[in-house]
Image (cartoon, rainbow over all chains, first blue to last red; front, side, top):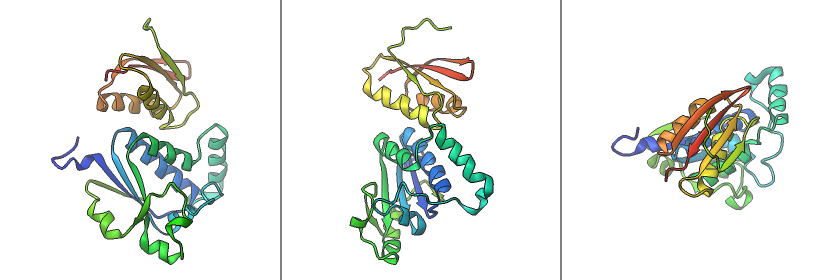
Length: 142
Length: 79
């Protein structure tokens, strides 16, 4: 399982996309990793950072283009069957294990935001180098 | 199949992946060592996820039974 550095027990996730389908897929990956005891660090960039603005999580963020016309109704039916919102899955993952969300400093500046403008799920503001310095093991980009 | 006494049963049927596993982990945290917990799951991912987690977390998977439309997992909190 873990190598000599224990790095297999760490997942670094760069979250770039701000559509509900990708955020759902990413939150499920995070929950699975947290369930297995992996430490997870998430860097929120661009459109993913934008949805983490205060009072914005639960809004409709649309779907990625590959979802096509059928995609929306598919996800809607999943919600009807009781699938939790992706933000709830992330919250559960944070309760379950060591999951930290970092706002990318550059993206924050781009949107003219400060950490106080973000949802409390976001732990801190991070530069890309410090995120990379800590990013041993698996790296996922969504 | 198993006549094991179950201390707590979680009906996670209808929950999508990885909900049933997360519900199991939550229950394992709350119950004392030795407690036997059953999870009912209709999520196909649980069939691989719950055994993978019990191995990794060193918990004891007592039984896996396929029922009509769901799977029943029985886990003893080992530690």
